Image 1 (cartoon, rainbow, N blue to C red):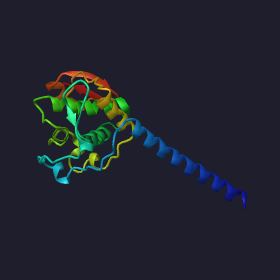
Image 2: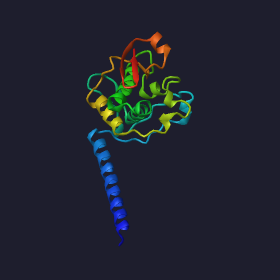
Image 3: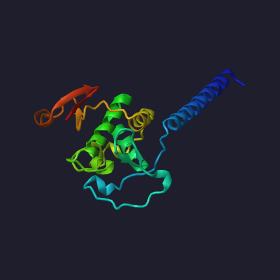
Image 4: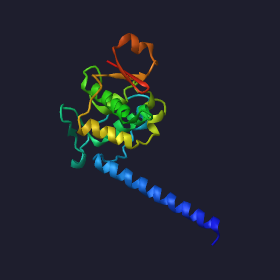
Length: 193
């Protein structure tokens, strides 16, 4: 066997080992965070106009869980929506940035001025740019930081939002500055109430 062929085989073997390790790490992260992957994808028609869904009977394995400090409940479908909106809105913002996006959605669910479910909040017309007009939401795959953020929010009751109901890229909206109270900035996002 020629030397160049042996080198190529070694490179392929190393690549294969790295891919296997990455898959194992991803599975371990998902198992450690106790988040079950879901294949839920909202109907495309929901992008243009929110359509209220009917309640359906959910198997016991997907029953809603309570968070430790409040009465907020969400299902695996809601978890998947939170994972995708966090990835679409805060892909480069790290685990904390993704957790902040999730908490803003949950803060809205708890606020009487907004819809009363994760799905209704995220798909409320004009609220989250990535869900509109075939936006990023429809094509993103949540990364390991999203799963860590969901675990923090759901199981550790993490909330550093100071009650934030809005966020935008820093310096993005004069409406936000004129009609809401600025709270803080993390990464490229400013948060408001």
